Amino acid sequence: MTASRNSRVPPPGRVDAIVVGASAGGVDALSTLLPMLPRDFRPALLIVLHLPRERPSLLVEVFSARCALPVHEATDKEPIQPGTVYFAPPDYHLLVDAGVPGPTLALSQDAPVHFSRPAIDVLFESAAAVYGGRLGGIILSGANADGARGLASVREAGGATLVQAPATALVATMPAEALARGPVDFVLPLEQMPAVLRAWGGAGAV
Amino acid sequence: MLDVASKDFDIELRLLLDAVYLKYHYDFRSYAVSSLKRRLAQAAEHFDCATLSQLQDRVLHEPTLFPSLLDYLTVQVSELFRDPSYFRALREQVVPVLRTYPSLKVWIAGCSTGEEAWSLAILLREEGLLERTLIYATDINPTALQRAEAGLYAVDRIAAFTQNHQLSGARTSLSDYYTAAYGSAVFDRSLKSHIVFSDHSLATDSVFAEVQLLSCRNVLIYFSRELQERALGLFRDSLCHKGFLGLGARESLRFSAHEADFAPVVPEDRLYQKRERSRRP
Image (tube, rainbow over all chains, first blue to last red; front, side):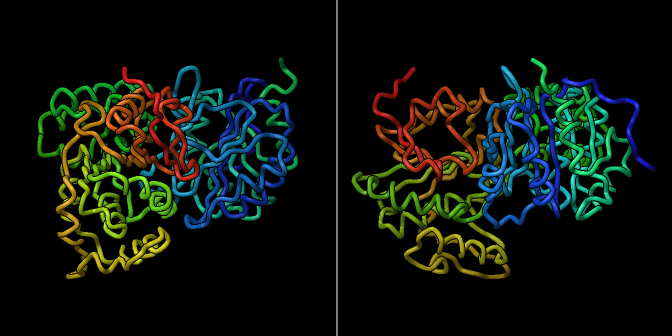
């Protein structure tokens, strides 16, 4: 099906967290997207980027230098803070657990999904269960089908969905797989994403 | 796979965990929910159950099914000398202190299939400390404990183990400690005489010994915050004055009420030491 803007556009300001999945071409996509987000961006960003297991994760260093937002590698049971970027550590699944006073990060070494640990589906499905409609999900460039099922969970839980326009992705497979799975709210090139993300988070709202 | 985001799943999950506790006395009710849900959804699929309620029915009435379910409820992922920098930090920062004790007790909490226990035994032998050491390796999964005690690992894993061992600051060759035969490597019986493999639950059991070193890596990630607090309390009470605690690479005491009970020794390798002023409840 052709996915385009869905009529069910989420009301501005209702998203507390945004989950992001990327694989091949993902570092480039995130290098464009994350630095465009302003210091007062409110939702937390939880990111799974497929990386070879043996390679030490330099993502935090790379992105800290370029982003207005603080960037962390996820630690187990860490309370999720607004306006903070969390990367899944290599060789662990990143999940969300409900907590008091708010949701926390959770890690596991359960079996890989789509040959990946971390897996995008694992993050998205657990976040959808905890955040329900107060969640946004984004699928960026990548070469496999991880994330398609997860983005469907975000949609079914009432969350907002966005997929990188396949023609603009370095590797179009992952965005295309996500679109084949059902309607999404937005299909956009990277440059047009920040405006949507700010609206999700309620930019300027007190 | 079942829909882990549905409300019915949450209800059925609680009922299933209650059933497991009442029937088999294994307490998973305080495990971290998100990853537990996924493992149970996979278990339901494996046992051809369309819902967790069906799985509950089978678990209650087919006791022979429970050991396989336990393999889904617990996670067995490990390597010898996993995270070599952790073992290097143990050698450099902890072993010099351990040398000052006339006899040593070490607790591997959540030893799963035994990789960490065998690694520590090898490390302590290399450092000349094993002869005065007793290692308690505990877990709740009896099948995993049997495999841990057998000390038998597939030969195709040995290359990775050897590389980890070298990176940990090895003083000897890993091949000194195992014999390969029929596709398996079996670890040395003389190491095993210093390891006691035993059933122990961090959720329901209590302190059983005073230890100088306690290693519990990638176990607390499967616990809820409340259960983590219980386990860390047990660890504090088990450790001797200034005893050492090692956690997994992505675990932290920062989000625990027990943070003040421990001082960081090598924070990047998650090595801590019990503080002097640490109080007992």
